[in-house]
Amino acid sequence: MSDEHITLTAGDAEVDVLPGNGGRVGGLRLGGVELLRQGERFGCFPMVPWCGRLRDGRFRDGAAVRQMPLNAPPHAIHGTARNAPWRTARESTDEAVLTYDLTDPWPYPGRVTQQVSLTEDALTLTMSAETYGSSFPAQIGWHPWFLRNLGGEDVTIGFEPAWQEERGEDHLPTGRRIDPQPGPWDDCFGMPEGVDVTLTWPGQLQLKVTSREEWVVVYDEQDEAVCVEPQTGPPDGLNTHPRLVTPLEPLEASTTWTWTRL
Image (cartoon, rainbow, N blue to C red; front, side, top):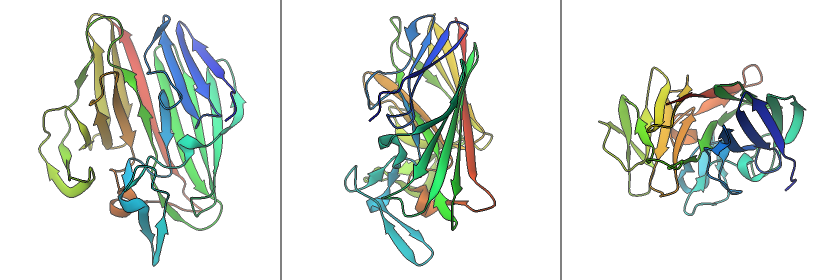
């Protein structure tokens, strides 16, 4: 793992980008206050070429059944790119562009490009997956770990999803959509008008996570942090809601975090 460390700045906002550690955002500081859980597994990592759990690590592509390593037995979780080094294509004071070439164990050659752009009041993450050959199913998303507490009251999570994906005993969606349930959550929600989730640290900060995508996983079962994960489909989506990356059309998505001091 390379220890390359890129720091972006805009106003009093600072973002750490760690290409060698899965292309993740390692930190986001506002006025010196860190918002993301620290540690090599945390920060905010890209989920690609799938998001969340993949049932038994398998997906079907036409007649072929593809097997991924079971890194969360009995399933495979969060794609392959978060454990791999990315390359820096370009960087400036407030933007970095990283690339990752899809390779074993993923069976299709392709490239993922991620753009990290910072302004004084927002961070935008944009990702695209393209193929070097045949079309393939894929998903992309982000997995941020926002600190539950910034030194005052604990964060609250505000959102109004249209539905919740019913979760089975195996932690995967059953295929049924149910009315949103109260937390704590490790659940996927549908927001057909686009992801729009507000994190509020009372008296300190409000941060909105938005995306044009319509699925978001909310995870708040840990003491240290809460996760708000916009993604292009639900968990196990390679099997249930596959999005195709084709030679003519890459798969693209973005998310923006916008903050306001309270």
